[in-house]
Image 1: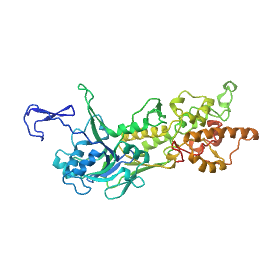
Image 2: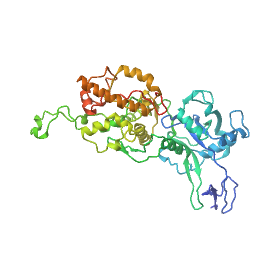
Image 3: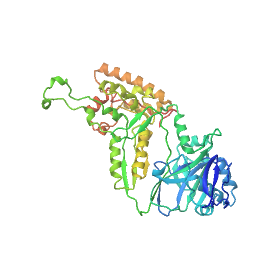
Image 4: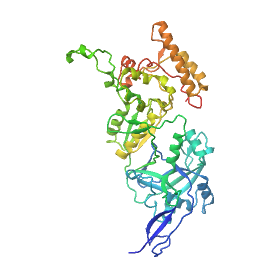
Length: 499
């Protein structure tokens, strides 16, 4: 048996066989210390709910964003032809790009082996094309090497990456994957972080995960929450920070046509889980008044009939995957971007306390009504689906994904106020809109008391909202409390202006 030798990479020792192609040496031990500083690279496409769907044998195309070091390597690469990089970058991709089966995702270590065993194979199968500078995009449009539109990047994301020095877009084409098989895979670009002290080990990771979590924790309105998908009907929300992980799904199939499952307008809302706790009844009474249960005239608690979109969606996803290869969800995943924090009201069960919790004056407290709680629930539900069924999800957003502030369960609109808000509220921040809404709600209550008539709104904003929860409008009003009709007008965000 040939003796072993070792390669020391960034203070990490890996054992390789003596026949390793570096020098065919038969020395018992040989050390190679690589001093190259790795370029910073993140993957823009594929992304979590925008996967690559690839037929066996087709080219795999990946869009990445890189720092200046990677770009200079492109500019100076020997054999470069206009926007096509020289072969040296094929070797970089071969070493750093990791493609593993979904069940084997582990970002604490590099790939067990490069994409291709030899540099020659890598150069034959991997090509790298320069696309654009992210600061020079027109209307935030991302295009591929053929100038075809592939996506639009959100201005906040564009700004985040630009500030990190990730400016240069490249398309990586892989002609064929070695040993390609049908299935669900994850793509990642692995980096190495060296140890701070001599006696510490360095570790591997995906840079994009760090940036993703820095972005969220750096926001003023961020409230650290954790969500777990459980076998029960409710997502488990706890007040502890949860690290998000970036995914880049690749679905390979040898089928000529994929079977598509389609869901739409699922409207996930965390507050529905608080509704279910309500013991309110349309017809109520004291227990001792009704000795015979068969003659009890009281109605059942309304909470028993409340639909939760989360439970329905999870069930539908489980059913639809049996007959489909790909799940497409079109629009309105959520109701709005700020919603009730279940962790703050885990012990709330009395109707009066539920009404207080649902009162939209609570919007002043970002811990009670944080941004993104329903998006977090969706993220964990999709993550569960990928892991449970090894099938991809394609998502198209709807108008509700842009709704900033919540509204009542059967909202009404004062038309004069709605028209005014379309102009006057544009210059207000979210906090100013909320403060204005609190004052107007108080004024509405005083007006209703003077008139002796609770119907102080000129029209209904949406007759169907109560039915979304399996409730009639009277049941919805009883469920939600006296804020049932309220809309926090304006929809302003923290930069001012409407979304």
